[in-house]
Image 1: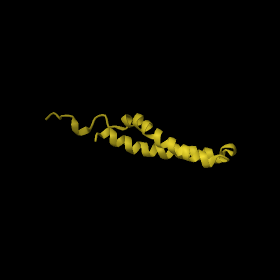
Image 2: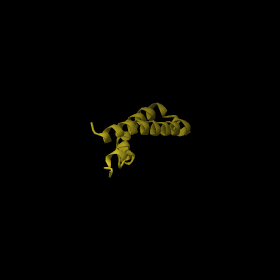
Image 3: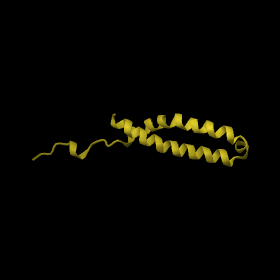
Image 4: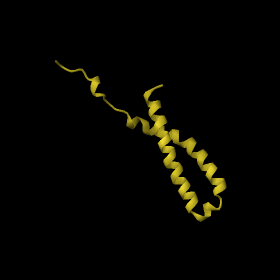
Length: 76
């Protein structure tokens, strides 16, 4: 697997946790949404599993090391 794929997997797990947490707090603290929580929470969980890899893929290239210090030839 490519390096960008590994980074995307790790980042998407973190993004999933953040998006799920924010949405869950909103659903449970807003009284109008709290009444429908038994329907909204499974929908929100599915939504975060679908969206987090996409967001992770957009963030992954910014986390790569552009130039590895050992890649440059040294003059001796």
